[in-house]
Image 1 (spheres, rainbow, N blue to C red):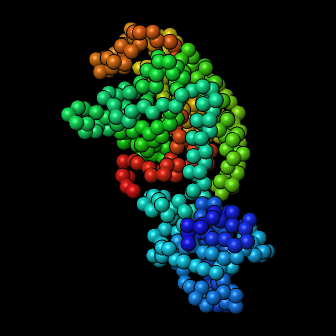
Image 2 (cartoon, rainbow, N blue to C red):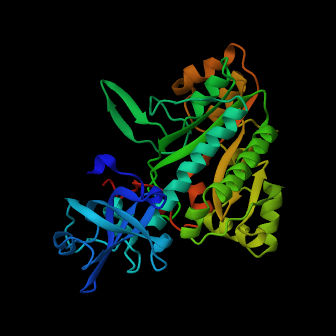
Image 3 (cartoon, rainbow, N blue to C red):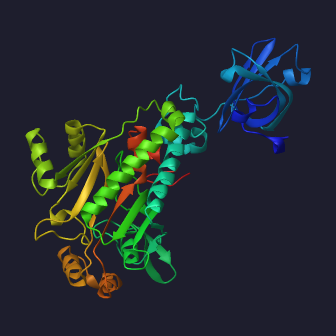
Length: 426
């Protein structure tokens, strides 16, 4: 029967329909029974009056989350969701769900996040949870849309690499025939190399892996990054593109995902923008009685304080960082200051970037200064010996942007199947 299936949202436009989905509710009121059926497009009420349906249909018993296919006639009903209800002529049980369910899908009973993640496919039957990932999908679509319009080319950097992309970050080793290899911690080196080619301006959305033993609400060990790199551009050009794409995404999420934002009870605001030098942000923090010194990293507590000072709905660019606080590939402005920047939004770091070093001599010097061995980066350094333009770029954490837009408190809520120190399944 499901071969003739139409989506539930389209059933309201027809008279005779065939639909299929999951049983969200089943109520038996003696002489009348009700089924609330759900698919990804919505819900519909199926009404079984004892006097109007076949006895075989009326005597059916269903467990919550069973999958059924139903044929019937749509009629007007002021009491039903959507103003119409379906009177069934046929009901087929495709897959009966065991009862009780391991978690409460409705969200009426609070379930620990860890247990929800154990049963993620069930958790995602909750429209509120599904809304997060429909929004995340829209974020990716809008990101692609924005940069394709600006003549960027989408790329897919390798997920297996032979060397560290970013100095200090720990790597996951992998077995790669008889060679030492690692899961990529960043597409950094490869997107830079492509600015030296005829592509010039590139973007990517891809997973990266960081073997850092974090156990926080904003870190997981496998994340999705949204990266760009552009030739003939300094850090100011990169910051401008970052500001533009974030605002573009948020404006369109507000328009395109109204139903999803409603499920999340989220009143999304178009952010304002603040741009400060690192030195200025340190002074602002100290003025607000936060203990921090010039040269310190911006900690999680500092990020929260910045959010208190400026508000959650502000894009806060912090540039001109001390050179020692930025990776080896970031271009120095002088002997102490870098051309690197961070973006804070919603009380957490959302993105990081800057102008890159395109001079092989300076690059080799910076690699040594960062305590790394230039011989491990030979092909990377040599790439800049054959005509390399100034270039810049950045990376946004997709899960962190999802957190900010959806108003989430834990990055694991913004990842379909998160990987952290303890979780490798499902």
